[in-house]
Image (cartoon, rainbow, N blue to C red):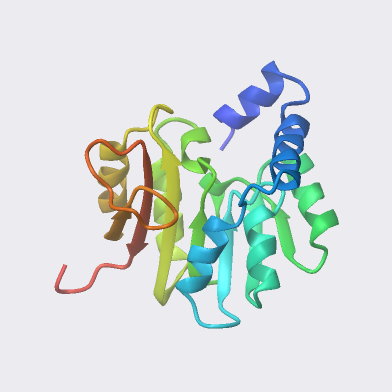
Length: 201
């Protein structure tokens, strides 16, 4: 797509935004903050050596952690600076530059698609359903997707659930943290586990 998404707009309006983003996470890691909660949950959902798409991989924080756990990871992001950093830190992982709204990997399917870090909220408004549909096309028959993002970022949870349904996916779990605390109407963060619908759904 040619439309500028909200991450690209941020970088245009605030030069150096991507570098500051990476520096912030480096500082958090140096302080001992847990930066692998998403990866631990993803790992728990999978058999060893599973195939994973890190959708909106950024600088490889999650995909790199999953690769260290023995999974086959493909990471994709449209920020060339972040993808370059991922390649430097995790050179054995397949990192690719690309826009999730145009996601097309012919012949490639995944046991799990991870979309964390508020990625969906940075998309061009109105394109999340397209991205979720691409996810469905790239899931293995028993594959799942796990998506996490916060409230107050212009993409309401109710709209997300409608987009999931319209994309032909099924919500099999709703949580408020990557540690699987229950999701309620008051939750300000959502972690959704998605899969292909069955006849029973």
